Length: 457
Ligand SMILES: [Zn+2]
Image (cartoon, rainbow, N blue to C red; front, side, top):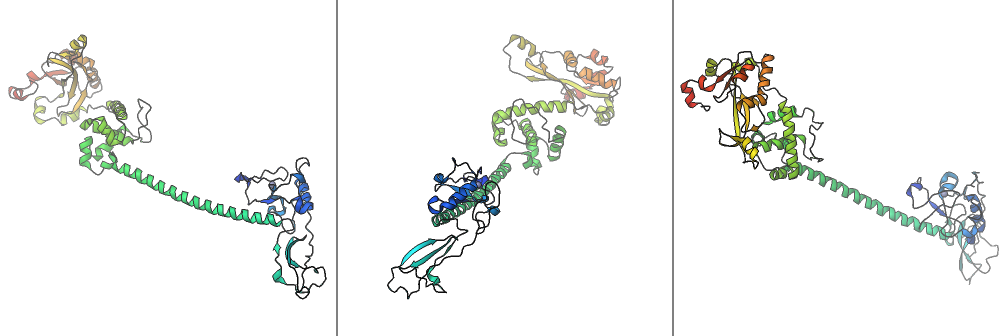
């Protein structure tokens, strides 16, 4: 049942728990049938207009909250009534002596016993045996206590039915509270078990997932999948992502890759090293096939930018120092060997593209790249891919190698007059001389014995 306070503008309401703080509780309003005087007194104290709140409006559902009494905790024996709305402190209640009526057993040998509740002004309720001659004034000094059932109430305000209803309500509330506490405990337990289950699942998932973290202690397998051991892998990662708190890539589509940055690199290296297909990789790394494709493209572009910025041309002294002895004897200052490499492609449908990519050397459609290595075979330069029909002269110029050599000469990485070695087909004498370098053609530089075993012949 909804209980609302009827005092002045008080908004205490049992439906809103926040208004029931500090142990505020509801008291039934005195009824005119039980105690008209008290009822009127309380109505006056509430301070509401007569048209709104009067004796006729008091029902069983009329309540007042406990905070309108002195000490804000309901009526006491001393202050049984609410504080008047104008804030005056009410006068303490006058104590009236209890009137007890009792009859001695002698006075009524054949009595008809009636039990009656006497409601006294001091609110002491007594059950007294009353006989027809009970009006006689023969009250003994020590009255029979066993026959007196006194219900002590506070300050003469409540009606026994209200007390009963309050007691019942209190019990119901207590039972509700106990049930709610129990429910709450159950919920807390459930939550805790669900939380621990979730943590366990996450841990299981992390353990089973294919990640760089899980390979840190297994150099052999890490090398198998990525081509690096743990130290090398970490060095590459640190070079690519110096600050792992900032995500280095700009994603091509608005996707949120759920795997860690380190695992993204591991994923890319797995693809590069073993060419696992995206369905397989997606399953291993727990991401979708589409995400695999985008992630791989993004990382390849990112790696191209990061690694492309690194100057791979070592100092001149270092190249000479590390030359193979035989080579050093014959070509002490030939610092690089260049050659073209061709990759066979599917025959394009466009005739123009067909003629552009047709390589006479390989007799098929190809794409061509220019590569420069040092005398030990380390890669110094790779161009991007050109169509197979491009001439060596053009590729030397268009790939940027010519420009790079000129810069290297200018900055002293290569001295003027140093050599570049190329295959006999490379007709780039003039271009190399433009760079103030010398071209050693493999046909004329190798002796006959070497020539027979040389791949370039
Ligand atoms: Zn109130």
